[in-house]
Amino acid sequence: MSKTTTNLNPVPEGLTLISAENPGTKPLKLQLTDLKGTVIKEIPFDEKNNIGTVSNMALTDIDIRKTGYRLRSGGEVFMDPYCCHVSGDEKWGKYTPFGRFDPCPLTEVSYTKEPKKFSDLVIYYLHVRGFTKSKNSGVTCPGTFEGVIEKTDHFRSLGVNALELMPVYDFNEIMEEKTPETQEEAKKEAGILKGKKKRLNYWGFTGGNYFVPKNSYSAKGDGVRSFKEMISTLHNEGIEVIVDFFFEEDLTSRFIVDVLRYWVIDYGVDGFALFGSDIPSEDILRDPYLKNSKFIFENRPGEHCLKYLNEDRAERIAVLNSDFLYDNRRFLKSDGNMLSRFTRHLVEEGDYGLINYMSSFNTMTMNDMVSFDRKHNEENGENNTDGTDLNYSWNCGVEGRSRKKAVMTLRERQIKNAFIYLILSRGTPRICMGDEFRNSQKGNNNPYCLDNSVTWLDWEDLNKNKEIFDFVKSMIGLRLQCPVFRRAVKKEKGAFPETSFHGESAWAANYFDYCRHIGVLYSDKSLYYCAYNMHWQEQKLALPNLSKNKKWKRLLCTNNEKEPVMDAGFLLVPPRSVCVLRAD
Image (cartoon, rainbow, N blue to C red; front, top):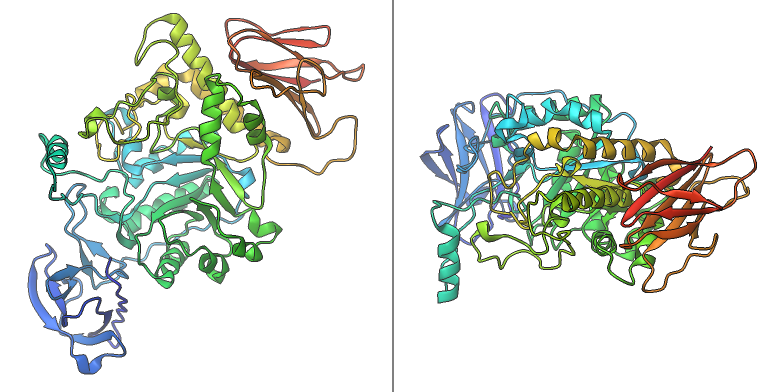
């Protein structure tokens, strides 16, 4: 990415002022283009007008509505990193961008009136293109910001109150082909390119024009307008929007902060998930324009950042909790010595918020983690060598699709178990798109280069798996209704502590390496008892005694084949099942 700073101010009328930092040692030139991106003229910057390393130019007699531009230093042609209006990227898979002199048409932006705390969010993580690109998505503008707008009813019905979007800035989806240096690399590259003209970066975790939403994600070919319309629609529904950014190395702290400011001020986003090796977390947290924005960091910010936190600010900063995924997947498939880690994840809180998740863009989906023992990334063309081997998945007895009733029933139960882990844990739950209706990527845990049915949601699965959708919906409703599931609450001293753990004896949980069952009691305005049994056999858990006018009532059990039995102060929990009781 070139380190440039350009400021375009068409004042007075008919005059366009241009400033740009030269990233190279060769003289800097301005390329003027037509609206197809074809170069029509090059104008060198006069070094007499330099201020430091910043070159300056005043242009007259150009029609800014019909003229584009790029910059050139020696043999390097590059975009202005501060460009806020781009053309040449309107079609997905064709990326020949150039800057525009004329400003984007003004579109009113909608801001969130009452931002929520991380502990009150349920995040839905999606890829704008893949979310509605399938022909059965039922939208008129598939694969676009408009398609997301058309699915507002889905978000409302599910009960989520925040979206996190994989990169939507103007990234370059055309991946550069590398020249193989060895025979092994040549074979790998040949496999990748077999039958393909070019490789696409489907995810978007790369550089690009950071100030501009992607035009190919707009049905109008105008990313700015479509993105703002999407933001306004979602905000009107009480849904916040968090956007992912991947910042390449060697970008200055000032540039990164300028980008984030722009997306807050001009586009009205509520927060960011930041990826990259050089994220200036301290500069971001102390910036006054970003004080009310939410931030999700890939790694925990350094201790020096604590000085920028107070009780209110801490609720706007979070880190991705990858341990939640790994530990809970292992507990789900009944690995030994995992109970203590599981219970810690249920109630853990800290200086920052925690973003809990059971699947992500670079993992198996929740359906696939109970359907495959190993990854199946063959379609990526890399001989199944890409992607992690640490999936901690279990196929429930058959690899891939199965019509065996016992396998199908167990897989559905395991998915429900996993959703309870996620939604009733005190970190912020993040649901990956389609998991709520058993989306499958055919066992692929790294579909970074696939723009097809593997990565596009199959919306027919929503009708096929409506029971899972309704179950997730009910769990989200329970979480939002009961604060004690979301965070520690300040309550008056009573008969029960806020949270307690129980085993085969009340108030005495066992954490031996062979234990795979535990009861968790939550006490606030109501009493809830969550019984977890990941053993392959029925297990007994003790129930705390209640006052004479109350008794335990079952709210749900993930095992539809065998009812839990309450008898003489004990709960018999079916194999690989979760039961939730309430005292009424």
